[in-house]
Image 1 (cartoon, rainbow, N blue to C red):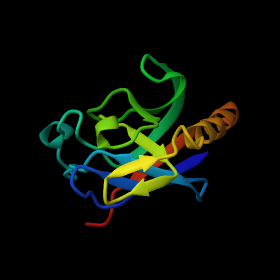
Image 2: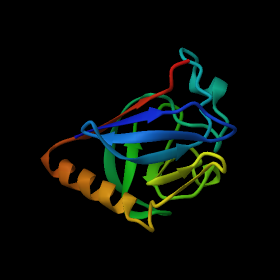
Image 3: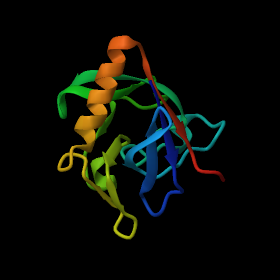
Length: 146
């Protein structure tokens, strides 16, 4: 299974995006600000807890998280970051580098909703769990054009 995250330009401290599963729109995402400087080491541009992960291709797994519980969607091998998860939340305050999912975004207020209440996270997790029984699952994260 292939996921693709197409990020929008950061506004303030919030980056919205669209997540696709095998080329079909799945949900919206919310992340921290994109601070990535292409070609520069992560430690030169990362602001801990306030920075979106670097663009790139990452393997997804379901892992136990002390904060989010069993079968938490986890991005592996993210340079300069650890414990990067996909979970529910409301705003950039909820992220700390992670990807927050939902079905409704409010660009004016920098918020996202529907991750838990409308089952977006549960549906995404079920698709990933099923795909992992057959093989690997990957996500490609693309920054907006400069």
